Length: 155
Image (cartoon, rainbow, N blue to C red; front, side, top):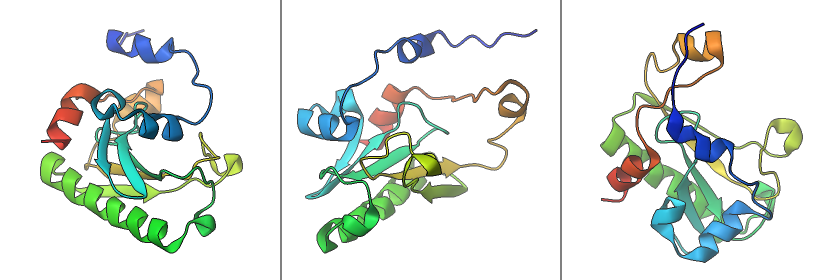
């Protein structure tokens, strides 16, 4: 059997599980570079997903701890989708993807890992970015570190 070495992943594998809501915690800390927060608005913010599906995977979330899109007020709704658009523009300019997956998983049954705090996934895609690795070994190869990606998206 072949081995794919990715020693930098060990800190994520062994990380203690966060108690509470990561979106609430990260937004309040005001340590944007450490928390990979890319954009901040009045009612929403975007951050890199530290367990990405693909390079450049962002999440856009309201500051308010809310789990359902129909509970957002008008300002939150407008700013949420405006920031999704801003994220697409930024990712398109910096990473040159050929497409995007954009979506929400509402509730555990729908696959939400964090179901109590609404967030929109913005995932850049390239033709051929799903190769044999996920199919054969259940492994996804990400070619860029989060720190490098953060610097790229915030300059």
